[in-house]
Image (tube, rainbow, N blue to C red):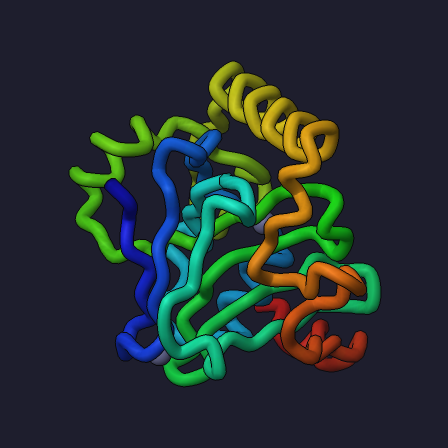
Length: 194
Ligand SMILES: [Zn+2]
Ligand SMILES: [Zn+2]
């Protein structure tokens, strides 16, 4: 049983293995908010949050519309932020180095109702960077520590076991991203700060 990935217009499609999702979280950091503004309206929740499912890139597969997959970064050292260029649906965020096996799949591309995500991935308890939320959000303390621990274990295991080599966002030989990366200038980045 997999969870379908689908951009809003349906051209970019794929799937993720829910058994390999380590945690669910909502991030309220300023970078994720700037990225939300870069993509357009309807990406962030009412407090400026972005919900992600933390998993291994190896658990993700694209089945159609790969030509629409695009990549940007908020700065020369920023993480890679992948989205569907056809309809500007966020897909997932990855580190720049594929040896760190992580992708935060954004809720917007998970083609399943909340109840199904809850059943397959467990409850959403973890809220990070809450001090940057645009309206008050309670921080999640221990569940955050637990999520960080689970994600850390996932990354270390993939590194040691070699599983990190399987990654649809990077070319296996060169470790280069599969798409050109649009890196924003400082001015462009500032213009996205609300
Ligand atoms: Zn689309
Ligand atoms: Zn963030």
